[in-house]
Length: 360
Image (cartoon, rainbow, N blue to C red; front, side, top):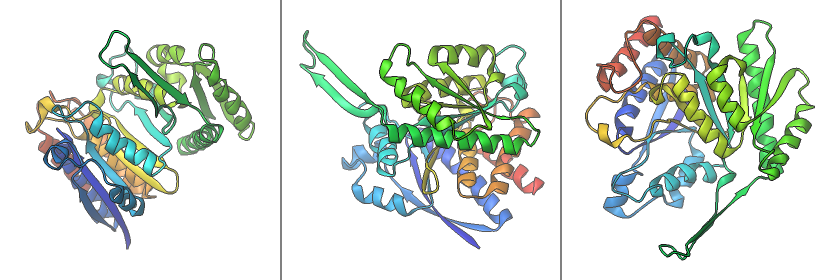
C-alpha cells in the first residue's frame, strides 16, 4: 500500500474550516483507491504568531522537505502586520523548497457560474504556469526615510536565465500533457506572456521562449503582452490552452482567471518543484469576515486536494475529485462557489464525500 506524509497548515480565518473539508475528501478517496495518508499538523499562522511571537523556524522548513506534500488552508490575520505571516509561510515554502512553479488551472465547471456572456465550459479550460521564485517577489529593496516627505521605496525584479528556462520548459511539458489528455487530435498550445515592449529587461523571457521552444516543434507557440492577455481572457478565453508568465503577471492574471471560472471559491493552485516538493492551496485567502460562520465554500480547498493527488501520481483519485466537483456544480446541487450558496461549509464537504463514495 502506498503511503504519503502530508503536512497540514490550517492557517488563519476560514483556512482551518475549508482545509477540514478538503481532508475529509482526501480520506474518502484514500480509502477507495487503497493508499494511506498520514497528516502532520503545523500551527503556523496569525494566531500562533500572536501567542508565541514565532513565525516559521528553519526546522519546520527542513521537515517540509521530507514530506510528500504540504496542504495549506489560508494565511492572513487582520491583527497582524499585512504580509508578515504570508511572507513567512508562503514565501518560506516557495523559497525554502524551491517551489519554482505555480500551477493554476482555470476551468469553468458550469455555464451559470461564468460572468462572461455566451461562454461555456468548453470555452474556459486552460492552465497558467507562473514562475514562482523570482521577479519582484525576490524581495530585493526597501524603504528609506519612511514616514517623511522624502520617503523613497525601491524594489528590484530579478530574472535569471536558469529560472526562466526551467519554468518555460515545464510549461511546454504541461502543454504536451494537456494535449495528450484531450486525445482528440488537437495540438498542444503554449502562450508566453510578458511586457517586454515596455519593460525591456523582460526581453530575456522573449528570447528564452524562442530558444527553448525550438526543442518543442510539436507545440504551437504564441506570445502576448500582459495587457493584451487580460483583454483576450475576457473577450476570447477559448484562445488559451497553456500560459507561461512571470511571477507578478501570473499573480494578476490568475485572479482574473478565477473570476471567469466562477469566482475565487473554486480556484486552487499548486506550488511545486516538479518531481520533488509541492504545496497546494485554495487561492481565496483567509476571508476574516467569514471566520467561524460555517459559510465559506470549501470547493477551492477540495480542488487543491485534487491537484495534490495528481502531483503524487494518483491520477485516478485526482480525476475523482474533478468529476465530483463538476457534477455537483453542473447539476446546481451546489448553486454557487461563494459564501452565498445557502449551504454550509460542512454541508458542501459532506456532499462531496457522499458523491465520491457513491460514484466509486
